[in-house]
Image (cartoon, rainbow, N blue to C red):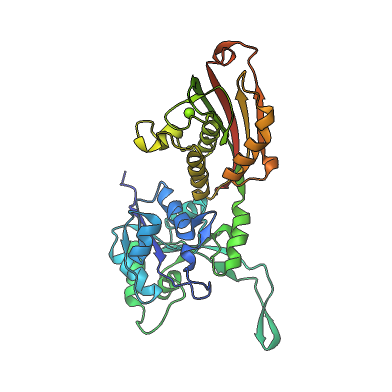
Length: 377
Ligand code: MG
């Protein structure tokens, strides 16, 4: 049995986004909270058949956006950029993809690779649904669309076929895409079903449409915390100072309510727990206000393109009575999470004098948080 082919992908991210407008090239615009190029890269890198992904583009911008990935600087035109990329890889098969096409289903990659079994190249394409017509000031004649398709990327090729096609292409002529160059050089190019998710981000309104296509998922996290009651300590619950004869003891301000909510929020994005981010061994957090813990968790969610939509917390203690402070605690939590008051619930219960909370040795809190995250494809 022969070894499986080595498959590389070239992600062309060198465009300037002239039609997109603004200062940010379209491949760096945010989609679901992440730059478009990050989605495109992740889809290629995650595919099990692809051995290597090379990015062609501005090295500094790519390093900031994608971190330590393999990058080579692009050329003056897209064709130059692809040629530079082809020289920089070693592969039997290569996929060439535009960074402005963010959402790449794995099934399209599968179909392209399968089609290379009996073709020099393969492209994903979609039928043209709209009526096409010429226009010269006023509406002109309709163009028959029955045999027309919209060609997308990635385009897949046998490495030798695409390198030969680039070498043979006249240097004074620009090519619309790589597949046309392979055809012009006598190669065969298969057409596999494309996907609307692969549509190019050309105009700012494309991003809003794609956000809707990605959709969102709701995730729930759970948090629980306990601190010991001790004389001579301040009592902070939910970011509010509460008058009491004792307070909670801990490395920070020991606010069990904010700690439980922080853990619930971190749980929504699988980001560990409060101790992961703010180790008690770190002197910086001695006596710290727990506001900063919750704000940090909220910011992590926002970095993932997510949004906290609700939290519900139960405070478990015999004393003090929470009722008189409930509104202040709700308002404080709503402020920290940037939520409307109606999305913050604060409840309290005793344990009928049972257990450590019943003996007033400590206070416990448990919380759930709900986060809306960008859906995945
Ligand atoms: Mg704690």
